[in-house]
Amino acid sequence: MELSMAVYKRFAGGFDLETDFTVSGEQVGVFGVSGSGKSTMVSLIAGLVEPDQGEMVLDGVCLFSSERGINLPPQERRVAIVFQDSCLFPHLSVESNLLYGYRRCPARHRQIDVKALVSVLKLDGLLDRGVNRLSGGEKQRVALGRAILTNPRLLLMDESLSALDDALKLQIIHYLKRASEKFRIPYLFISHSLLEIRLLTDQVLAMGEGRVLGQTTPEQLARDRMGQSQVGYINLLQVEKLRKMGGLYVYRWGLEEIFVSAGDEEPMAVFELSSRDIILFTRHPEAVSARNLLKCTVMDTFPSGNKVGVELRCGHETLIAEVVVQAADDLAIQARNEVYAVIKASSFRRLS
Amino acid sequence: MPVLSSPDIDAIVLSLKVAFTATLLSLPFGFLYAYLMTFFKFRGKVLLEVLVNLPLTLPPVVMGYLLLLALGKNGLLAPVLEPFGMRLIFTWKAAVLASALVGFPLLVRSIRLAMASIDTRLVQASRTLGAGSLDSLLTVILPLSRTGIVAGSSLMFARSMGEFGATIIVAGSIPGVTRTIPLAIYDYAGSPGGEQAALVLCAVAIALSVVVLLVHESLTRKLTRRQ
Image (cartoon, rainbow over all chains, first blue to last red; front, side, top):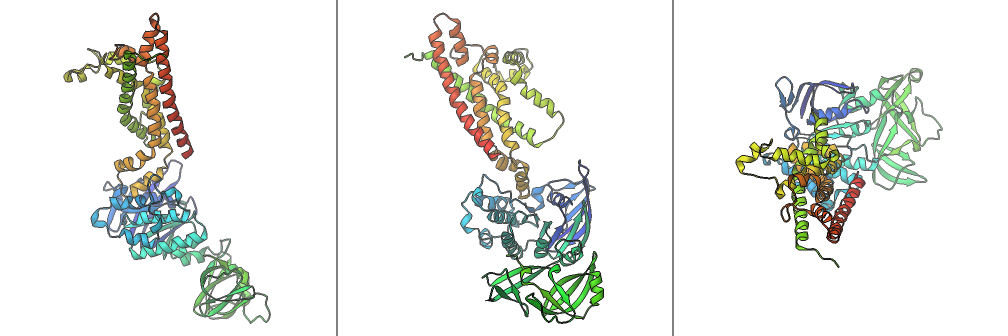
């Protein structure tokens, strides 16, 4: 997917949006706080709002051009949206909702098999139901299916996960990734959640006050924001359960073993760990109450606000810790140093 | 037990026929008008709004008289009707027209209420799913305003059953042709010894109105619940 968008739009309330970017990729994120113009951008791309001037091109097809007088209507753009609160048609069954776009898709574009999609999104048991009898997660899965069945050139996910709790979020993320890869549908994932952006995209446009502030990777964005963020940088640890010991759960994380208090019986899990919950020692601390002591190598350091981020390598895995500037100077932390990272067992937060 | 005479039955059947036809005839226009007013902004919207709602406050006699002038031999609409040999005045069709004009604002009101309660993003969703605006109108807006359409129709039907002022001017009160229930009651009330017959027809009118309003009430409740 390649999208270039150089448009200007001014609203009656005084808000204006001006963009000039080209982005190509299959899983692109748009990140920004609410009011930064993300949803306006979605409406502009989908053709629901007309720009004042400029040009928009998607995969070589001009969607809008004020100069050439082109403005493709929404139904001809082949850009589907999954809204925050699903927006299913309340007067139709799940099946009719799913097929709404499919039936309107010209035969030459129909590449997705309905049955295959229903099974990928696990919608088999829901088809005859009315949409008012679905849970939040089910609704969003149906909305996703409905959008994908239009065989879009681009799928716009407009804060599609924001209304869901963590467990459902991960479930939908899993389905979205599977469906997008299986049916080769690129998406633009719009969110104010850095976590969602990191889990779902490989590059990201950062937005603020109606402008695109920059184009970067989710990882870089997370590091840049570490200094200002209240929670620091969130490390995501994919782990495998080994055993239970006393009140603690022992997981394998790469080559290391970690001790976690908030574990459970699931064999696989993802844990969040804030960069702020990692304490660094340059020498082996003889006695600490924290249950995790990892020997790491410093790979790199980077400034972020008044903090210094420290990229650590533990076995094959990477961990980001943060220290204040003075601490970094005192400990003389620099690349290739060996350090010990100390983490309390209670600092891990379970994501799934 | 008083029974209905044959002219009374004629009046009841005619009333139902006129009210039913007027409602059915107005429905497509009412739907389009409500759609226009709910989803679009345009110049002269307020003026149109006032014009359509005028029959609500204007004396029906005025409406009837204006209609008479328009449909008459030298009237405004004469050039349109003349070539087809259509004569509307003093036929049941004129009664339909009078009812349609007077009941239209009531029909539109309910449909607009229903349309305003539709989440606009549902319409947007349908557009991004490949539906053109007409398609979207028929497959999303129409089914979602169903309750309002039925509620408005029932209200207009009831209003048409009671139409008097405009009808008597433009259609007259010809027994078996244009004499509906209200006109028949008027005739009975004016003739000596007609009280009994007038009361019977009153009872019929009340019964019909109650049924229609009960239907309307239950639908409106459903509508507000959804909002």
